[in-house]
Amino acid sequence: MPANPLTAYELTDLRQRRSVKWSEYPPDVLPMWVAEMDTPLAEPIAEALTGALGRGDTGYAAAGRLPEAFADFAAEHYGWRPAADGMRLVPDVMYGIREVLETITEPGDSVVVNTPGYPPFFYWLERIGRTVVHNPLASGPDGYRLDLDRLERDFAAGARAYLLCSPHNPTGRVFTRDELLAVAALADRYDVRVVADEIHAPLTHSGARHIPFASLDAPAAARSIVLASASKAWNLAGLKAALAVPGPDARADVAAIHAEVSESAGLFGVIASEAAFTHGRPWLADLLTSLEASRRLLGDLLAAHLPGIGYHPPQATYLAWLDCRPLGLGDDPAQTFLRDGKVALSPGPTFGRVGHGFARFNFATAPDRVTEAVHRMAAALDGAGAR
Image (cartoon, rainbow, N blue to C red):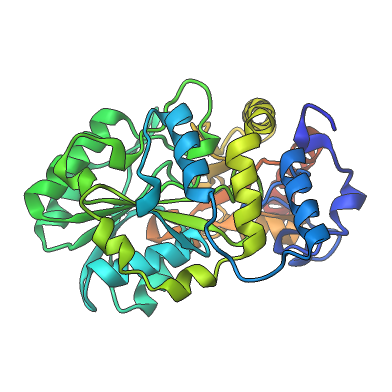
């Protein structure tokens, strides 16, 4: 297997995949949208799954050693060892968020979400009867940051919970310890519970450091609940396994999640995630090196071919949040790139009102496909200008 897992497959190989990334659009469209990577499985994960198939081990899921495996990984990577015996297996991070919020809030309660935000946050919170409070990130020449003054106003207005995406999707921002301590202080002042989606944490790039919210020395951190998973870093989303990880004072809330929720997780997801956290770290290191090269390549290509697009290299994730407003393509520039360039990006408006004029670009693929996608986008812009 090549040291760069992003170059393992040719385009013809990828087009045989049945995942949503490769089945949503016709074959002439280059998919650079949903958060899937074009990688093979890490060898320890493939071996663990092959062994399970050989045993016919395809029954209902149990957490097994996954909590301990995650605790060991977190201790090594973040300097934080959460208590394994307090964790609860859930099918995926979004499922866990819904269960946690249904436990710690009541119908009609307000939940603060930073925008742009992961699109399922909006529709799932509405489906469980919670009111979404859009809290835009502040932007500047150096990228995005939390708007703490706006956050305080939203907390003071009666919010009961704050859904913190850290590292942030779609901007790739890694929040600093000082920022998170400021959030904790506000949450304590206004009695707001923090639920932290930290699914992208293993994908933090060099030069940044992920701080688990629950690791902070603050009462709000002790009452917080982190959702964690191997699914993004090791490309396991379809296998369905994540963990609800309580702070010391939130154990009863996580314990209140019904046991049937854990049974809805996938056993293959548990097996694969345990292997990822335990034996998949060398593969992850190679992946991060490759992603950082793709991140630089994307920046160079945009500067050369689409200099009007605003781009802040993400500090984590393999997702780039592109400000296309200077191009004059309207609220949803992804439509133009799809129609005229045959390249699929995630539409900015689905990330909230502040996403109008933006698009999200997934660069977790081979360098030649990143290059082709930008060339197609540039050609689409030329075509749009000609009409």
